[in-house]
Image (cartoon, rainbow, N blue to C red; front, side, top):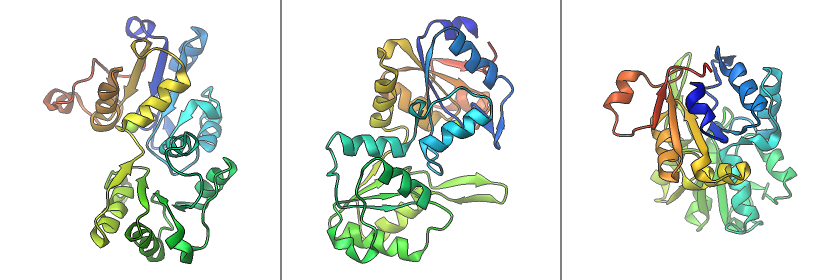
Length: 261
Ligand SMILES: [Mg+2]
């Protein structure tokens, strides 16, 4: 694959199914990242999984032996913070329905968030990110915010995610419950949204033509990359098989078995 990888100066790399699977590094992931560093290539890890902050991801990856800084990780939370910093969303009167870890991460970025649920009428925008302790009160107040005119931002619109027990509700299912309570327009902060790819491109500081996206998901990684005008490589170490890739209308520029150089 050296021939393909050598063509590009920067890489947007998905995590789950590309770098690791079930929290274990995939066979060629480490040597691929070492190859990028040795050849002075730039890279960003772009994931839709907002269960941990970009900072925590960089620590997890480093523990796995992957060279990575906080700035090299882009998640829907990075996208949300970036949108706020650019002034698209007012910096104040934001309510966040996420894990405490993520709330703390957002606060550290000097963003004021409303902490008292009964002040829902003050909110201009809300962020919803599913987590294991999400409860009825969260659902109730998130719905009340939306009814009072707050804009709804979601870290993903995926309805479920796979676990050892089976498929369980993801953020998209929570968003569906909010929209059933009160019809609302939702802004998806995750892949395939154009803004999250734009942020990854901005961090790489390269021309689009110099970048390759590597992902295992046709709907998020490949479709998002194609829409953003970036070349894409589907890697078959995650959720997509060759048969699925051949049947799909979404076409990557390259299909690779793994990250072997
Ligand atoms: Mg993936």
